[in-house]
Image 1 (cartoon, helix red, strand yellow):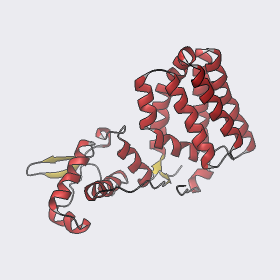
Image 2: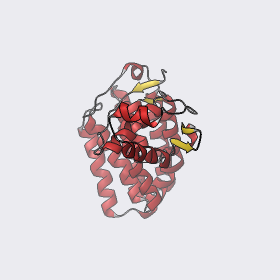
Image 3: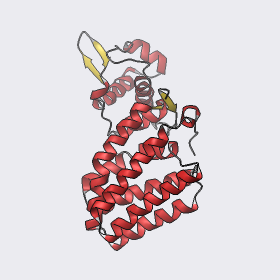
Image 4: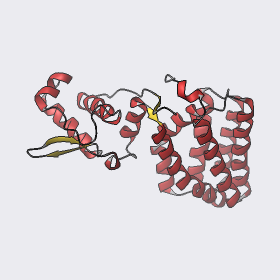
Length: 249
């Protein structure tokens, strides 16, 4: 698989300092400023972006807070190692979509999902309300109505997984779901089950999640969601993704 899979542009920032932070952040994530690299000086950056020094400094502060940069006296502003980046920051996730999702990003996302979602599904089976079950079934019905490679299908898939997190009753799991929502949506768009057999497999295992939660079967719910995640990972490896590029809806 090639390193770069797809670019999914997100909404632009609404202020000068946020737009500068976004631009530099994307350049860092895309590797145009490598880890350990010192950024150009303030004078060069203010000319490059056409902003004042206070605006530039506010942008740098934003990136420092998100773990992408560090500032040191007599050293300057330096790009931090990837391990220091706050991947649960909504902007950092959005900038990854702008820079281009690669195999490593998808693998990291799948691993955090495997660490959280099976437990969320098990808790949902024990704690779900009638309203939770109704929401899961609505999402499932929508998945069946939508074309497999449509934005609507990905959105319905996302709604189902968010509904599982909500039904867990665990505030941290709900928050994780909300924070990585954009990344999940992009992942679902990339792993769209285009082949008829793939579609049937996806619908089958999602239905098993819903049925297990509704029946209060924690182990079955957790096992079904593990299978769903692994199925998505296999589709990410499909050759068609090497060529595919999508535009935002």
